[in-house]
Length: 596
Image (cartoon, rainbow, N blue to C red; front, side, top):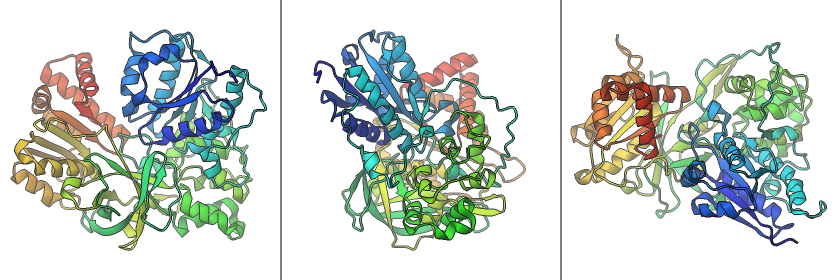
């Protein structure tokens, strides 16, 4: 064994997913080559780049195309003018992302891959791109990487390989890994001029189907760890998993509102469990009998009742069978080779449009497949989890967390669909044990300087983290800066979330400004973007005095529109050109004075 060679596996993770994949890669490489290390980006010494032999990087992409929090310094270094030449280094990059983020999908993997080559490093394998349902794709990428590494190191191709944790943990029997699960950077174009696909939109936007996560995080789902029937914690993709108890559920909207928004209280198993304002929680949910039956009926028609109980149980208790993605569609085409999607790259806009407007069971309706029941487990690779912002501060709570949950409902064709996780949280009996993991969100933090002013901009149930912010600031009202909340919703008589609390904070002076845009009330219908422009001068003055601005919401297009309004407000009030205003905003983002 050539111990003079060495491999570094570099993990750039925020939710633990990339770290988990990096650990699987380490477990696969170690049996054939011992001189390998795994390093988190936050601990990596950047001067080591120039002396690296083989670097394998696993990175996620956050928000609208940013590096993970732990990799920000590394990103700035390697993209900067002082980055060293990497002529000694060979490399490969794997990205974890979410195609719902459009052009930002796996942007970090693409940028790191291109930059390493630009600095003189030698690519040994095309970079890989994993979607929301990343587990199978990551496993396949590792499988394809191993012979490349063996050749690079001059090792025997027959050297033994250990199974990764993902391989041994997946309940897919002896199902083979599908080649279509991995999407390496595809630059070729496909002729889709004759492709006719109906993109019927749900009658109400399916927020959970597209992405239930807050927009400041693009990797919402954690790998599943098996949970027992106790409150003991387990490790799941770098996170601690434990059982909470559903303690209280309170409807925040009126009975006449088109939306049902609830405050959900979960009792934690230990008073020692800690979290900070801005942190999030992953919730594991079971799929309802009706949802599983609908899927199996569309897949197997009158033979649905003959599907083995073991497969039904896994689909119900362990798999995300309601969120469609381009990667899932690509895997599906192996069982439906005559579908118009066959051969299209994962980043095809056609796949993205279909995934955003069709639940997975629609694939079986539109393009019937020859698929066996056990192959359903290889088709649906994601675990059944959703991510929510925590809406209370631990400093004023005693052993519980609260969530602000909108019950997702929409129509698709002749079906009434209810979001699985929101249905679970809003209808499960009080006392139900619920498996959760708390996710530290360092990208969304109150300023360390308590005297700093903050501006909070949000939409609907995205008020959740701001409620935690205000609870924390109210506790230290004597030494905290000014607080300004700009929030949008539909109707003040139906959708005024946390009305009593917000007005109490305003009356007590904790909220210096409370601006609410009502989009479906009165003659003048207003949106958050309008408030930003109407308050342009005041907003610019706050930013100039050092205020921190936060943006939170579920709709990427609306968030982008708010950012455009912010840029215009700065341009008008600061008398700047559009380019100067954009640079001003970018500078605030670099110093974390704008967080989302």
